Length: 65
Image (cartoon, rainbow, N blue to C red; front, side):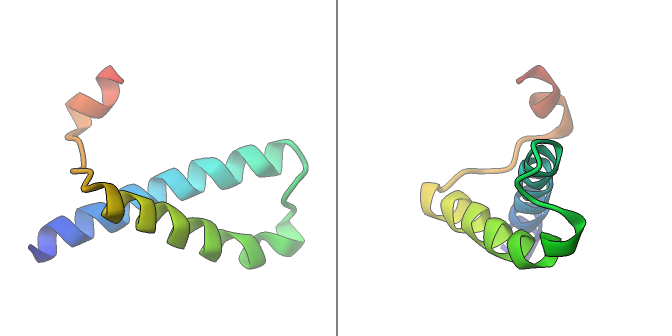
């Protein structure tokens, strides 16, 4: 079960990173306020993943999406 949690956290980290990158690109987040926003975004993504019972896809499955 611990490996599954690690996979969930890794998935949430990747998704949160992509969200933050988009916000940086659009000017909504800057390097100066990155720390203020990244944690809450990561926590929300992880909460949604855990609530939905989503299982992390393998790399091959993720590439097909």
